Image (cartoon, rainbow, N blue to C red; front, side, top):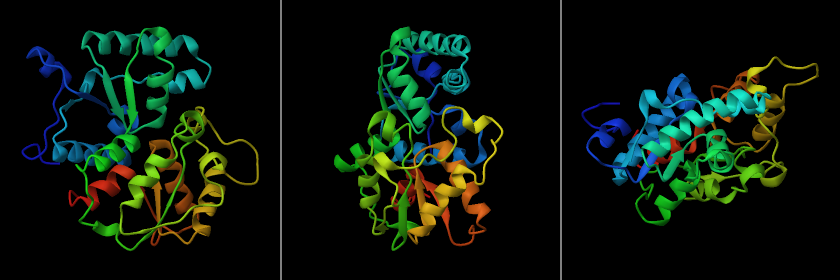
Length: 266
């Protein structure tokens, strides 16, 4: 990403000028450090720049939300991490947060309030749908997804935890592509196997990994693109594709990457 072309304002720099952005883009650990999901962060920045959204990131001031610690039973560590974030966000007078991670979204939206952090938190699937509805994103270029068969994998933290099922599908419906559903979808969707801090523990005894079971659902549809909206799902579904040795004909992409490509921003 060229720094000459795309701007990524830092919250601290804006605050020094007495400014508060309309939106804080919460990048998250995966979006900051995972090589695959960094591409999603770049896609989001491209979109935000293209539509002229007044946004900023925390940069090195951003810390983990504490979600993995909480799910693993370390409430003490979660509260330490959360309170530090809340103090920072409140000091910057942040009101609206957009994030591409459902885990960050869920905990910032639903579990920070009792600790003093009350924000308007939006997942990027909903945010992208809003931009499309407002006519700011048209996806007229089509990109590499034109004519492809796409299936969407529901993130547990978006779907069952927050009842967000339609927004990501409405985004994908804007493409000149064929959106096909897995048999287990929406409220009956199958977890990728990474939620609840499972991402960070060794596999338990069993005949099959959850992500392999889930990618079999996706492959049954005949789709050559699996759309995800979560960094954990992205990793698990990609590993599932590799386990089936289908990397040559089945690809996993995040919604933001798909939108950026269809907008001609790739």
